[in-house]
Length: 161
Image (cartoon, rainbow, N blue to C red; front, side):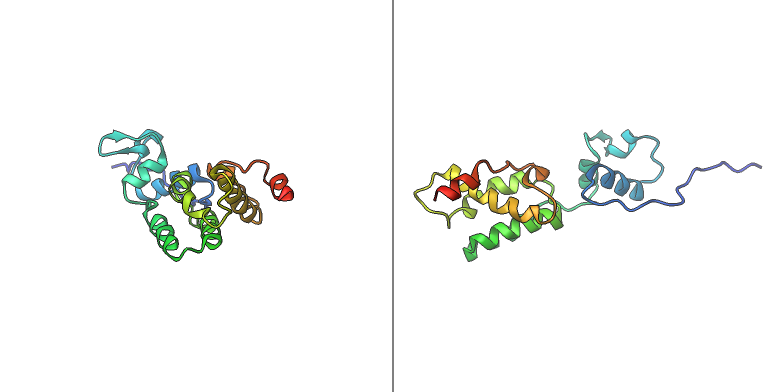
C-alpha cells in the first residue's frame, strides 16, 4: 500500500505586520488546514472575502480597532491634546490599527482643541497632522503610509505666525 505524498511547509519566515498583505497571508496559512488556493484562504463560512485581512478578522485571528478607539476615548477625558496626538502616532506605529483614517476622522476634533480658536478648523487639522507627521518621520514613516492626509504648507504658516 502506497502512502500519499503531502506537500508540507518546512519553514515559514517571519513577516512584519507592516507588510500587511504577506502578514495576513502567513497568518491564514498558519491557521487553516489544507487550503488549495488563495481563494480557499479568503473563504470563511462559504463566503469569499475580498482580502486576506478581512478573512483573518472574520476568523477571529485579529483584533479590531475597538481597543485603540477606547484608548483614544479615554485620552479625550484627560484633555491632554499634544499627548493625544503623540499617542495616536504611536498607536499607528506600534499597534497597527486596521483603519487609521477612521480613528483620525473620529478623534480629529479632540486633537485640535489646544490650537488657537481664531484659526479655521482646516488649518488646525493641518497643524495636528503636521505634529503627527513629525513624530512619524522620526521612525521613517509619514501620514500617507497610514492613509491619512498629508499636512500642506504648515511650515510657511508657522513662520508667518
